[in-house]
Length: 405
Image (cartoon, rainbow, N blue to C red; front, top):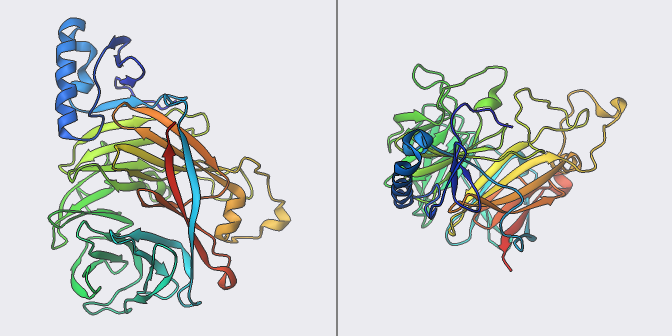
């Protein structure tokens, strides 16, 4: 159970329950847009006249918390997972790494970075055909350092972030160099919002910024605001406590931030205000604070890997959990400081995929997958690493969907 002293609104079959009282409400806005927030506040203010102001204080302030119920309300819904294609590294210099991430533009082209060769971005078609690479490693304008993450903006421009604290933008037409700006830190993840603001997940250790996981930058790279935590938290020896999965919300003014070490997903607006919190009390995902980093020696702790809001107003969640058949590896076979390949990690991990209806707050479906899926590429694509060295350096794209009967 997640401990939180504030009132929690539980979304269920009959409406909203706050402090033990049920209020019948039409909950159509969920966590998503301003229209839904205004509509829900009207319902709650009217209800407050009858049940007392004290029973709905947290929701009226705009910070709504609700528990996702299980089992799901859609008894006939199920999640489909089918392998769409395989991306193969064209050479050892372009080998995929454990940090390789993927994005897809509106034309279906998949961009992939970082790879073994610093400063290089690979391109693939949606069917898996290799389309070539671009990018030059260097320090001057138009070149790239060691890439940390990539993202496509609404206009299909590609933004590349590197360890040299730079954000470099490439044209959507011919991938020619467009511009670059300095960033205050290396971005772990990023979202690009119109008219050109970037929100980066980064560790900025300066007064007023330290302990906040995300930072909004203007088009020149200057920090406009830091947010993403009600109470800033920073730990040198436990950096995962401030790690977040970052995703764009259903509007240009909202973001999703998911904690790595608990099933807690927060919606923030770009003004830095916490809009709502989704909690899920799943027995297979206890909140933890101390990391066990050897899945061969002890069952790996659950970790929330990726979230994505689709066009239908549903939130998709990927969670890595211990393999259902996990067994301890004998000490003589572990090796000291041995790094596991992606395929070896799948021996110790499964993935749980879940989908939540944001308009009702209900869990629609949940599915366990016997491999470790990494992250969402688009609304209906996730990827799985299969890099077993130069002889089999692959990434699988899997198509995910919700089947409603």
